[in-house]
Image (cartoon, rainbow, N blue to C red; front, side, top):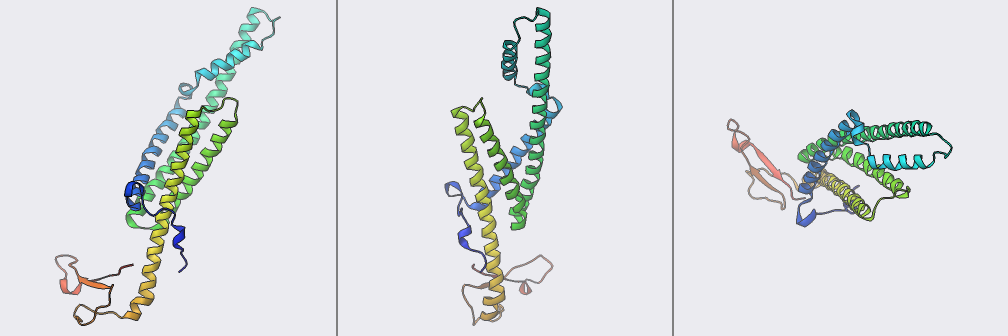
Length: 242
């Protein structure tokens, strides 16, 4: 029928939770995290000097101090150190500004697609889940590349940090697969519903509530009131077990 059920990689949520409820939790969690990223990124852009790593500045200053030649006078040495510290501070401030801009852009994009994801889950529209999947994949891939660069640098990350980062990536990939699986489930359900209406429904025939002699399981029909003004006997709903 065009959609293979094997494309559904996650069928149920954690601890027996339904996949739909888990996707709502994922969307809510990413909305909160993206909001925090927006505030932190804005703070890094407005006050970058407050986010400068003084430890790295001190280590760079000591390295620069060791490189000063022995024949320099005390005044020349002091001026050289001051210029070096100013230059290194400027470089670190620029790095903080770039990281803040990246965090702000990532937070804003993730916030909007998370809101769209919540709306798509409520309305059961698969097309509204695609933006979150795409943006999350891009952010996760970018963060993974950054982690590889940090791990290959001389100041490598610690073992504890590596475990935490790997755990984060595992959860991020699982969340993406969860939303993608629910996206596929809804598409399959809609595909089956259209197939039923175009084929099985017409072949079995439609029977009104007055025709009590014929019932074709698993299709049942029930009269429901739409509002207080409408006639209850004229409002019929057909339930199909997909």
